[in-house]
Length: 307
Ligand code: 3HC
Image 1 (cartoon, rainbow, N blue to C red):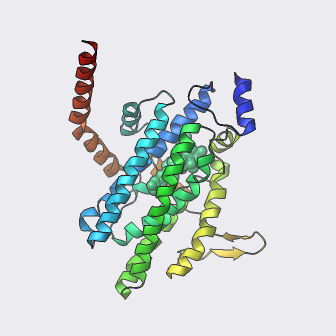
Image 2 (image 1 turned 90 degrees about the vertical axis):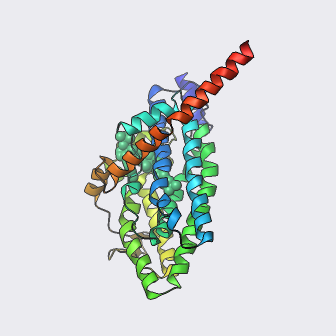
Image 3 (image 1 turned 60 degrees about the vertical axis):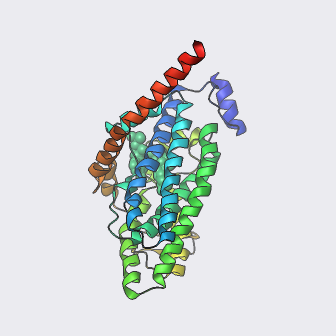
């Protein structure tokens, strides 16, 4: 069985739910997919807070659609995790008990409307860099979910860029709002890719299994290289004096973010960590009656069929 698993990976084929897989491969997938699903759901909060305050009907409709897309992404991902023998309820309980994580980026506040644009541009831009390679991940249901997620993330990234471009063509005050937001989000966006490769306990094994296709540092570099010309186009400054093109490497050099800060956020000590989890807990409890009603309906339908 192990041989067949290895041979499937060596051929570049996918592992499917009914295939035999090592326990550690399954556990790693559940960990990563659950964390990813939780990130999508918790990620609705920072931007959702702006829906009722969007400055026009068009901006409101776009933001509403975007936040709903995040809910959809969470659901595809929970479904992918269910194919590994774990339920959405179980994963949610683990998140609420602090036993599973969500992306560090969503532990930061969104005090300015420009943050809606910056999240679209930088955060969804980083998410695309990380997730496009995951369309080729070795586990079938995860890779297939990623295809649709990435298409929608591209729309999210463009709406963010367009929002910021509109603000940059506005007043001095609007341009200052964009710059202030980019100054706050640049470093947390770099942290989204995880710790440096040398301090990433999971990367080597996840790469060997084809779960991850690139290392954290490679994806971070790709994101920086992709973002610099976009920042120039927008006319915003990325807040790093060490950000320079390195001709010999064919890449930009840049200052690493504060890894101690990432570690603290991952531990649950981010600026909004407690608030995000409390909100998620409240929403879960408020939805209890829906889950009970759905179960009662299913039981009655089953009894009707049997009787
Ligand atoms: N935030 C929170 N935790 C993080 C993190 C981050 N930015 N980066 C790393 N970690 C955690 C890891 O989960 C791991 O903890 P664990 O072993 O207890 O689970 C630990 O820190 C060590 O990190 P590793 O590099 O060894 O972990 P991974 O190999 O799993 O790599 C990852 C981390 C690159 C985030 C990888 O899990 C991944 O690619 N995940 C899928 C994508 C994802 O989850 N993205 C989240 C953002 S979703 C999003 O952006 C929504 C969009 O709509 C905006």
